[in-house]
Image: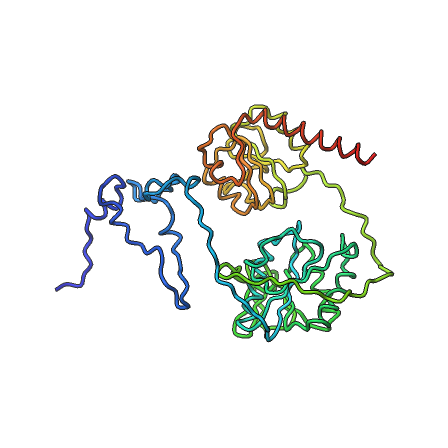
Length: 409
C-alpha cells in the first residue's frame, strides 16, 4: 500500500465552506492538551472564534455564533480559582523593587516578578518592596509571597537617596539572595545602580534571560548578548520572563523596623513639571482622548482634550479625512499605545485599531452603535451622541475644579 498522502479536494472545499453542514467537523486543530508538568495548555489559534472563508483565509467571528455560542458581552463570566502556592518557611528570599508607576504594577513589573519567581524556585519566596501606598490589588496573582510597603512623606516624590537607605535596611533585615529591579527609565534603572554601588555588587544590566545559572543581557547597543554567571543584583529588561499566570500567592504583609531617615538630603524635589499633553508622543501618553468618524464637532473635541488634560489621538478614518495629523493616528498602521486610560469617541473599532490599543489598561468607548466592536472591547461603554457627552464632560470637569478652588480658599 502506498504511503503517499493523497489530497481530498472535497474535504478541503468543505473546510473552506462555513455554510456546509460538515464544516465544523473538518476543523481538527487541538484546542487543549496536558503539558509535561500536568498543566492544561491552550492553542489560542484553535480557540479563536472564527471561520475559514471561501478564499481559504481565516476570518474573525466577533459574535461567537460560528462556534455555537452566545455573543461575547452576554456570555456569563466564571471566576477561575488559581491554585495557591504557599511558602510558610522560605529557604531564601528574592527581593523585587517594582517601578509601580501610578501605584500599580506595569507590564515590565510583571515580567520582573515572573523572573523572580523562577529564581525563587519551589522553596523560596518573592519579596516585593513597594514605596508609597499602592493602588494595586493583585499582588497575589502577580507572584508575590511577601509584601513590604514603605509608606510616608520621606518616600514621596523623587528621593533616590532615601529609598536607597530603606533598601539597605531591607538588606540588613531580610538578607535576600537576589535583588531584581526593572532596568527602566521610571526609576528602577537609577535606583538599581545606586543599590549596586552601595552593596559593592556588580550588577547584570538589560538582562533578558536567566537560565541554568547564567544570565544574558543586551550589550553593544543591542547587537550582541553578554552571558555571565547570575549575579546577586539583576536589572532586568522588559519581557525577561513570562509573568506569573497559573498560580496564586499569599502576598503576606511584612514589617521592617523604621529605616534611618536622611536629615541632610542633598536633593530637593520641587515637584512635577507641567507638560503640555499635546506635546507628549502617543507611545508615551498615559491618558489619550481619541476621535473617529463619529465625532461631529472637532473644535469641541479639542476643547475637551485640553480640559481633561489628555493627549489627542485619532483613528485612520479621521486622519484620512484631514481632521487630525498623521502623527496622531492610533493603530497597527499608526502608533501602538499603552495608555492607562484610552477614551475612544466615535470610533467603531477596526481590527487594526483594536490591535494598536491592546496594551492599554482601561478603555472607555463613546458611540451611538451599541453593537460596534469598540463597545465590545471597552471596559466602560457610553452609548450616546459624542458632542453631548463631550460637552457634559467639559462642564463636569469645570465644576469640579471650581469646587476645589472654593474649598482651598
